[in-house]
Amino acid sequence: MMMLAAASAAQGTRVPALQLETIVYEKSEGIAYVTFNRPAVYNAVNDATLRDLRTALSDARDDRSIHGVIVTGAGDKAFAAGADIGGLASLSAVDAEKQSRFIQDTLDLLETLGKPVIAAVNGFALGGGCEVAMACTIRIASDHAKFGQPEVKLGLLPGGGGTQRLPKLVGKGRALQLILTGGIIGADEAYRIGLVNEVVPAAELIARAEAILGEIAANAPLAVRYSLRAVNVADGDGYALEASYFGLLAGTEDKKEGTAAFLEKRLAQFRGR
Image (cartoon, rainbow, N blue to C red; front, side, top):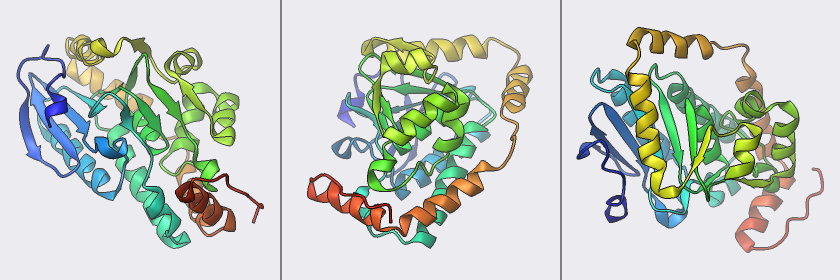
């Protein structure tokens, strides 16, 4: 909790709203602050994180005093990293598809909250962390932030909506390059391709997110709500296919090899099986 003390105080004193296991959830002057709080593991997203995220988002959605949400990560190294690799290594195909659906449903709640959500990306946003950021309304990155969907290096694909949201944000070609190479890009490149809206110095990150929410809050609430709803109208269920393929890939030899190589700190030897 101490590492959160340096957070911007531009909105006044933050008041703890709910006691959660993996997330610090606070409120101040109409803004809900959701901070992933597992810095020892780069704020990696696990099942407990997703449950806590759903709880916090549901509260922010139902609280009429809240006009916007800021999502960020504890510390100065990571916004949120991907899933626990050890857990993925033992995941069956059936369980993998269920997990993909659970992540998708959680991030759908984030995307369709009915209130603007700003991802204040303060470090690594990889795998599931990048997918969380993409589900937010607006993404502001610190100048040392990093983004990527490296699931192919584990014999998998993005299973939290990444195959659907990334092409919409950056275009099909750029999205496929990131997904198929598993590459990691910096904040400036993320801004150039349209993955993030702005890049700011780390010390200004939360204050800038607060300022944007202030600009939005000055507008007609119903107009904001229905503008969000109009933009977020579903245009097909690519998520079902994504979850199906995620489950399929979880049963392959390459997934076993990819996760084992990661845990054993060696290069993976994929065989296309």
